[in-house]
Length: 329
Image 1: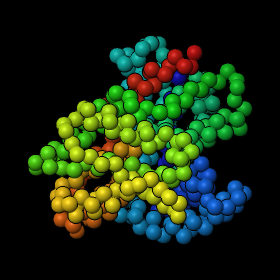
Image 2: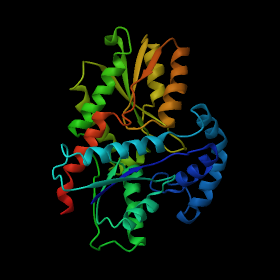
Image 3: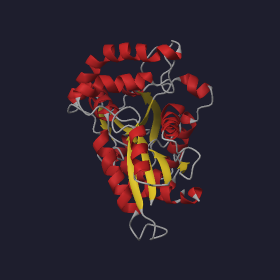
Image 4: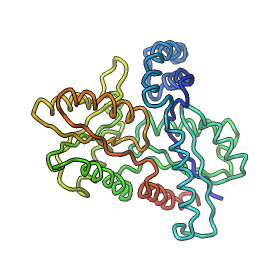
């Protein structure tokens, strides 16, 4: 039996779990290094979470009262397991796969899922983050949590074998799946040749890039791979979901929307480039906040659908897993 562990950041499954989620998020120095000694990070994280939770709760209320990411990731895991156990798709039909998923900041927590894998007596595991583009803040932090759990449960360095897939931003089938969503998004418009496309990514403190984080380079290479697969477009890369007083990657997505509107643009398609699942950033920030902003300036703004559990995306994840099987030997 081969175990596959999907990793994601998670999200609150109710309005009551918004504060715990924010606390867990701000407690992680790999993603947000608060300006205090590490021993005081959690204390300050609690204060920040308390201060921000009232506003964030309202955002979640506007998208239905919770993040859909848990349900979407479960569907992705189930679909991937079916794909991998299909005799037509599996390189060795005698192999069987069990797909698990763990969240960095909400239930099911990564450490608990690692314990479940161990209890299920699975000895070989492929760890696949649902972040195509590597960053210390996402993949790096999640891998650290997996390794911490393995150490706690005493299987580090034993017959338990783990392989980590760090990045898949340029995988051909991922690019094809993303291209399909962009083409479908463009087809939502009359005269799609007049549409401006904004690839919108979760922002990152600029200091990460200055220290060698490859996130920005990976984003640009994904876009380069996509634009060769679709009709000609005029595109821009913007960043969203910034918080805190540090310098973040620019330009922000809302600044690009405003600039295009001032230049007379009337149609914008936003492509959530660093997100593979719907969550607050797509359902509230893009679909509600940015859309309202655009409408007030006379611009029709639409969004390309997230990959979620689209068949081509599941096919891409399946091939990524299968091509990494050899690393478990």
